[in-house]
Image 1: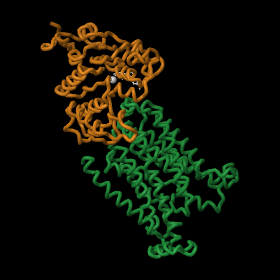
Image 2: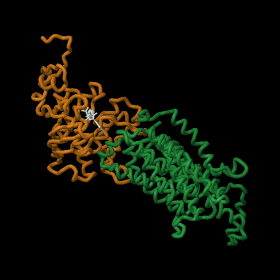
Image 3: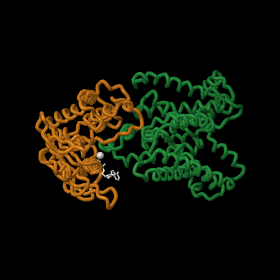
Image 4: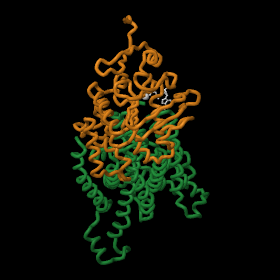
Amino acid sequence: MTVSSRSKWILPVLAVCLLIILASILFGAQSLNMAQAWHEWRTHTPLSEAPTLSILLNQRLPRTLAALLAGAGLALAGCAFQALLRNPLAEPYTLGVASAGALGTWLSFILVDVGWFFGLSLRLPTAQICAFAFAGAEVLLVYGLASRKRRMAPSVLLLAGVTMGMLGNSGIMFTRYLAAPERLVMMDRWLMGGVDVLGYRPVITLFIGVVPCAAILIAQAAKFDQFGFNAELAAGRGIHLGRLQVTTFFVGSLMTAIIVSVVGPIGFVGLVIPHSVRMITGSRHRLLMPLSLIVGGAFLCACDIAARKILPGETPIGIITTLIGGPFFLYLLIRRKFTDWDV
Amino acid sequence: MYTLNAESLNFAYEPGSDVLRGVNASVIGGRITGLVGPNGSGKSTLLRLLCGFLQPNSGTVKLDGRPLVSLSAAERARTLAFLPQMVDPVFSLTVFEVVCLGRYPYTGMIGSLRSHDLEVVARCLQDTETEPLRHREFGSLSGGERQRVLLASILAQEPKLMLLDEPTSSLDIHHEVEVFELLARLARQGYGIAVVTHDLNLAAQYCEELLLLSADHSVLASGKPEEVFTEALLSTAYAASIRVGKHPFTGAPFVAAQSTRETPP
Ligand SMILES: Nc1ncnc2c1ncn2[C@@H]1O[C@H](COP(=O)(O)OP(=O)(O)O)[C@@H](O)[C@H]1O
Ligand SMILES: [Mg+2]
């Protein structure tokens, strides 16, 4: 199929995304009466006396926005890492960036519990700073390990990433006993991933983290096209590879870290979305990246609806994305349609 | 006319094992320069130095008298194009998209093509006879088809000088001759071309200048085909017994390896 014949799917996909987003606002643990909410809105009822509107504005809407922002950012980070590392299986989770960010966030929780942290008195976003410190360091380490040989071996990259992910998880387990017991439940819940945020503070954090980073990454789209095709041709056309690497690693890990610090390590969005979107857009990043952004957001909304609805109570969203993404990852591994996989 | 001049280049990837020793080379507008030599003699490395990807340990590369390093990346990309020996795309692109990639130095950040860019792309597809492939996926092409598409994408860059690393290594004889004819046409229009090739006979026929690198990584001979393609020089360079005659139709040197089983006449 040629790209132009596939691109007719773009509009229907966008429509489905929109429906999912609406559904995510409408459906939840309690079914809301929209007419009631509208009435409360129209009559300017104070929120404390408008239960329906209050749920809508203080729970459903922030939750949907959080899912949108987190999903969009993770999908976009996947696109960027895949192009930069020339590896179709790279994404924040398989590269271990997400786990490193999680370890950083976890340690920041613990440091706060132990009462050590200077950031607390300065009112710095402690969790985000710690998450980025770890995620950034992890990306550099994995990249350094994998590019020590003359050619950066894709399999080495992934093995290093997965190993770093395991180390990050062990670090979390290792420091559990330092956490204040009464906070452990909250921390465990965060660790499984969830967009069940309350109020708008987390949404604002996500917004500040995701929007500028996404804009910077999308601005590299033409460079990703060139670099994904061939590094030497890209260099010959005037692309400074070092600069592209620094920008993408910095911005990609920063965005991942901020997302993880708010919604926990949610895996495989960055893998499932770019691969699925490529089927309708082809591999030109200036189409692929914006559409991945939207589809990624809607995907996480859909997973969140499932998290609310499938089982009684709430299923952690990270478990749902892994249930979808894990088999998808295996399918990509088995299919092995990668030209430079067998290095 | 643009001229790229390299003087006494020395280069080693790892200290102690030289890959180029005291190499002089030039790529001149209006001319095809052939780079020949045995595998591993440093031809690809020389091209990488000529286009500024690698910096020589000593020696200079100058474009019209200006050191190559003093040019901006965009300026360099519009003057010099480099076609690598192997291309290994990770994502699938169509032939048309691959050729459009060549317009990068002329487009803004978004990379959207204007009608002039599309005209150039269409012409490059025509020139390399890849127009019928335009909707095919690059990864599904044969080796020879890929090489022609890559050449089209280099042409779309509209460089003044082209450095081509084995652009005809997997082409059939028809397309190989077509590519050399295209290069000759481009040279007549003023393009300067350096081409690495293992087809010595086509090199002798189409190149005004030849540079013969030897296995010890230095230039064994350079000059007109008649001066470089002598039995003595070629036999030394390739460590094989090589005979040189005259091409029956063009009169250019005609090179053949001699089997050890044959007795020379
Ligand atoms: N990136 C590299 N790092 C280290 N050594 C290299 C690299 N590329 C090529 N070489 C070595 O340099 C020598 C010349 O290689 P090359 O320029 O590719 O030769 P040619 O193109 O003439 O076959 C070879 O011995 C090769 O092994
Ligand atoms: Mg070579």
